[in-house]
Image (tube, rainbow, N blue to C red; front, side, top):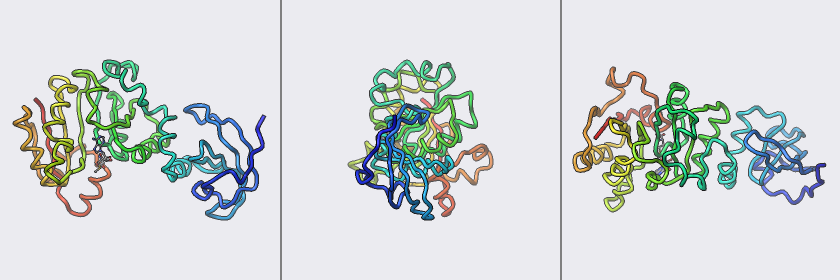
Length: 288
Ligand SMILES: C[S@@+](CC[C@H](N)C(=O)[O-])C[C@H]1O[C@@H](n2cnc3c(N)ncnc32)[C@H](O)[C@@H]1O
């Protein structure tokens, strides 16, 4: 039986799309990923002042009864303070407490023995979602440090669920703790943060320190692809190859001008933004 709730006890109604609440009941709602306790609210819509029902769960997100799925996802993301809860309940995410058990078990996680490709620092996940859709015979893992950013990738999965795509919220410094030796077939780094100060060079994802980590998890013969519009970062990345024991199969300083290399290129969010500003995109493909 639903429980009557005190309407005044709900904070942040506006961020949930409600101007004011008139009535509320507690109920349990199956939101596909798990059984989540939530509250049914009746009130006035912020956007068009219509009176309607909303559901609000774990104090962070709402589902409108009339809303389409896109609106639902957008509204969920609006309250970033709830991002950790949304991630903790997402079946698309390998949860942090499970991560130590992951090395050597990725084939079980995906329930098949298809190759595993990962994107480190995937941001909002446009690239990896498109890649997973295009290549159902490959398993993809998107890695992102920040919950609020990972949420955007989850939103894409809610709109279009793909069985061959999973996510990890983690710092890639710990990448060898979630993938076993040689478990990964391909690594993508796209528009990695430049960390321009020399003393932060170790934090750059194509640095020799990170290459040493990739060396462990990447299968023999596996490749790493890196794209960026940041020329100093790209030059740094190229200089790191030899001391780290990697070789370049492809290097271009203007990917979009190279008819052959650009064929099948999937643009990332940053790539769309910076190439539309006229910045040339650098790319390498490397191996050991
Ligand atoms: C500049 S954005 C690029 C996003 C996306 N790859 C694109 O091309 O549109 C870099 C992303 O990498 C993430 N990132 C940076 N360092 C990371 C690390 N050590 N581990 C995981 N993610 C990281 C950042 O949080 C950010 O979302």
